[in-house]
Image (cartoon, rainbow, N blue to C red; front, side, top):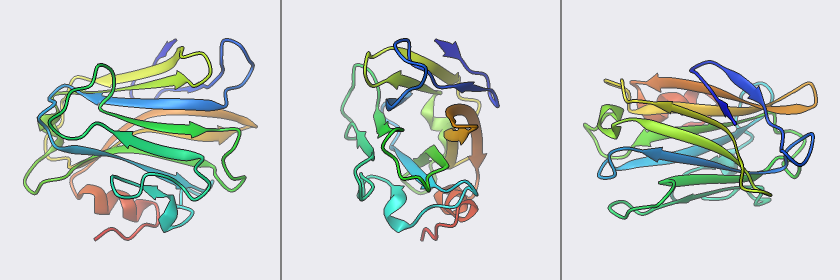
Length: 184
């Protein structure tokens, strides 16, 4: 398993194969009472979302081809592992997909990610359950209301993961604008 630092990246390979296909990206935060939402943007190589149906959030949990799915634990309930997961199959995503961004956003007005108490991300091999890479931050956030956690991206015929940990004081709308999504 690779433990990533902010800005670091790693090639995604399985213990049983030279490359990885199905993955689970598990996201957790310390303060279970914090009302947060994991979102995913499925983008092209130029970092632009493929379309409205490729922006996944609580009310739209799958791409049209069902190659990227989102599932979350309802607010107030506990989970033994992850508060939210993005399930994807890198072998099955459309050829146009160059990057997949996983982000964490606040839901309620006036709430910031400082209330998360810290976040962690695990990249899990969907075939054997092994953790391939992980990233965590102890929660040194202040005014951010949206945070790009990680990006999965194609590079020289391989998929890689980067620990981005980039916050947006402008929230989900600012994150969306950076990738061609108009979020009201």
